Length: 269
Length: 371
Ligand SMILES: Nc1ncnc2c1ncn2[C@@H]1O[C@H](COP(=O)(O)OP(=O)(O)O)[C@@H](O)[C@H]1O
Ligand SMILES: [Mg+2]
Image (cartoon, rainbow over all chains, first blue to last red; front, side, top):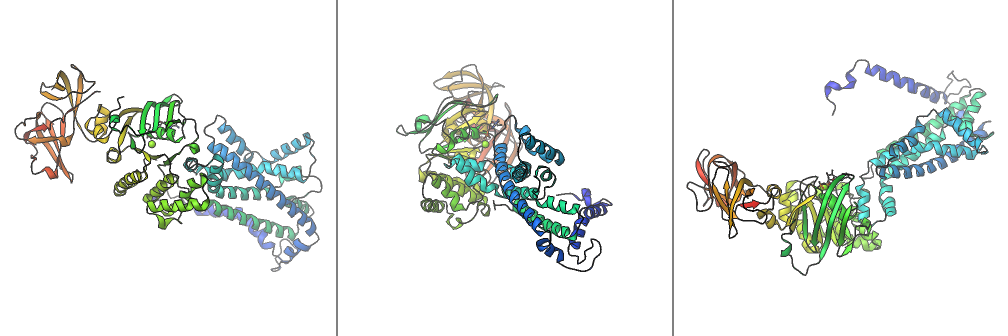
């Protein structure tokens, strides 16, 4: 219970600064979304409401390219997110339940470090790694890179959830004759499920819209949605790009919303 | 440690849990220092001691959650110290209940039976019977969070009893309940133990609870066993200062032992006043020890009674419902607490504060403590 004296809202300028931040954050997104419904060829002149650029995305001259790219993106995102979530779940189980082993702080650092390393560095490193082991660049290299950088994103919500689960539940299961595996699958997993789903969705979104690393490790002619959009933009921005961006944005919003509600939902109730 | 009270148990009873010279160390901290005790089949056994004395540690060693650093634990003659918890026919009622939050009450209770290989329907039927036993049948489809604390407590009990363990371990199961509910649950637990015939090992820091419920009590302090015996043993014949002080309320007098004849010890207080009481093992002539006298075994009178009497002045009378507590300033000793039950008001006297009077000990009320 915050006392009245320390109510941050009472500071002068609080509202103004908040508003400014929100505008800087969201104005571009709002503009893109609105202009994706523009009837005009022009990026800036509003000529009335229309869905023509959405039609263009699905059946226009670039639609084949975008469809393949979207398919690649989805397949990669699903496989990468699934694999990363599985690995992160096991890692969280080991880290949170493994007792106080000596390398625990180091392990935690290693798992979450990729979140803080500049992505371009990771991208270059990943590329050099694949080159040095003579790996042919293509869909598989993208997939492997995505699995790798998705792990920390999946790990955080899962381990946060796990820390909130007292270990007396597993002890009660063991006490009631469950094997360690049964205690994991019947008790711990269901209790962790909100964290796991939330971790999966986060990893999925991160994989879906990754550009830098993908651009480095993809082979020639292999495109995901972000690299395809980038390729297209290089030839000049057309309003269909705004339509695609708006579609991606909506998908992200849906995913993040689900993730939020799942992690909030308490299956202990 | 002497094992007083052990002799009282019927000879033909089996030992359910035998802890032999068990030691528990966490790094260089010793949580339990060489504990040995035998818990009989069918017994309601209580581990009693202040917080941090190692009760939970001992219980978790019996359940299998903590390794035994040294020594051994036997369950009906079989060494179990190296068995994992799921291989021990011992179940636990956890302090926070640890009911599985994502399962219904019925599935919670059926869990242990299923893990023991019973079919789902069989396990559920049996679980239903257990819920009936604790009068919670109407809640079987609910989730644990939809029950009150007292109801969750009973579910935890039903869940632990359902697989019919040989020994049931209860770690301060009533401490989260309010007083009224706690009293009711004490009776219910006792009743369940009689009905099922399962050996209960009950952990509590509440001496009153221990005295009410137990067949035998092990009083622990700082990782050591202080005394083992029946509630009466422990209350009326405490071995040492710790037990006398921890169990119930008591008055302590510093005395020197002058002589011991025919099982009676003649002592004197610092001021020279002479007292006689029963001699005990471990207290010899010349030793300076404490004498413990329970407040309810004292009575007051205008003139010294025929038993041991000490002169004093009334400081205060405190009315506490069922009885009156009187604080007396003794001439030759510290302040004494005298308890007069309301039902005794007819033949025991109460004096106004400031009155000079005598505090008298009932016969055998004074008890010498070894240390
Ligand atoms: N895992 C542990 N590591 C280190 N010390 C512990 C651990 N568990 C318990 N202890 C210590 O052992 C002592 C006994 O604890 P416990 O058995 O929980 O006491 P009680 O149940 O009687 O309150 C305490 O001093 C406690 O701090
Ligand atoms: Mg405890």
